[in-house]
Length: 143
Image (cartoon, rainbow, N blue to C red; front, side, top):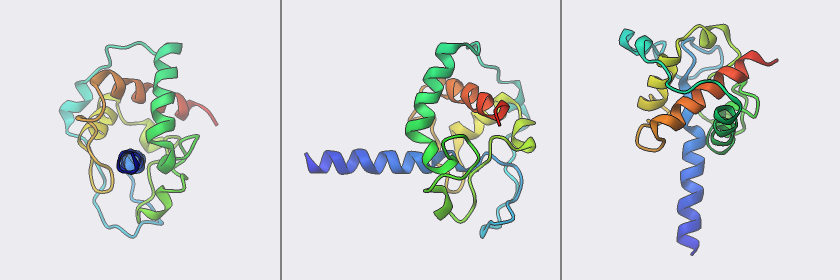
């Protein structure tokens, strides 16, 4: 039982660290000298088959709260407690550089990961990743 709880807790923590690298801008607080993260050009052709509607946003919010907010913060400003320990600040979904990226680019980054952000293509279904993209977009529209 304790082993299962430890495994579940480890998964949640690692998943929370997950969506750390969406920003294509080098962060002024970064100790990591990674190049800006750019998705391949073809990723811009990826389009969500799901409409932004209340159910999609609710499901995206649930996933975000469980797996992303520990790094990206509850409102997506990249200020989550776990994200501060990464060395490179997680993406701020309100940043104009993140907002300027296509949905397909965000989906590709979420699927493939980089650095502190693990790939989620084997963790989340395509539908769940699109739900997260919709919710990230929703967060970016709020202040």
